[in-house]
Image (tube, rainbow, N blue to C red; front, top):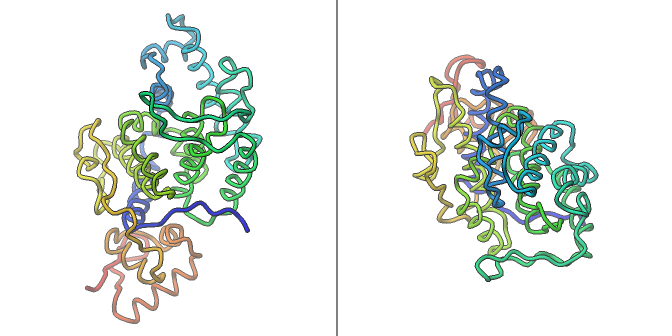
Length: 349
């Protein structure tokens, strides 16, 4: 039987997926992709953020200098980390998320001047320690290659939305902890890669930088998922981070719709360093509902969703979604206002 990571698609998660899908559409034609300088700045923010989480003390200005080939004062290890990250993020578009060799090659690039066995799975047991306390013991080394093969196979075959699948992969990767070092930055890198294959916009977004702003919440979400043996709280946290990243990079005059039930401190007007709070009840489900009920729920929150967006979010083909919409219209529960291109849906209470 194929491996299936444990997680639940909650109402909060569906709301965030719908909101993020809409935000990505709004940003698609923005200056984000049009400005090479902005892309460069965001890439530097990404590298600074992902390395800072691992304790690298080099500033954004110093990393900018390294990118530009200027001399920088710093420890040999920290400079090697920066150069490895630059090379890996430059190569990111060429990697395939479902290719295990690509993942190993990416780790080899990232850690080439830091680890003797860069690009190879660990051969010893590892754990995560904080303040002398063990927070996580990874699976034994002899299980790593099999666990990673199962995880990659799941990623290749899953029908879950890439926004959800990328979060699940990120958590499962951190749980397995397949390398002797560099697991955190590789997990974040691979989530960015998965998202970029859904929409190339994510190659230009400093997602890792926003994770750094919520570093303690990031660790807490990982620990909560460990305690539940279920990645649901981590999915919710990462989707909140993605939503906030999109808000911060939206054009000045672009409308931004905050997700329903979004954390208070992750709203549109929240300060950059506001904590992202986890849902109070991560077990509340909508996954068991029938497709028409899920569609009604989504359209009640985001009336502008198109049929294709709905199909992607609920994991059904567009014909199934079309039939469900027709049934809802015939039952008087759903009405179309305006044209197919510029109109919106109206849920009949």
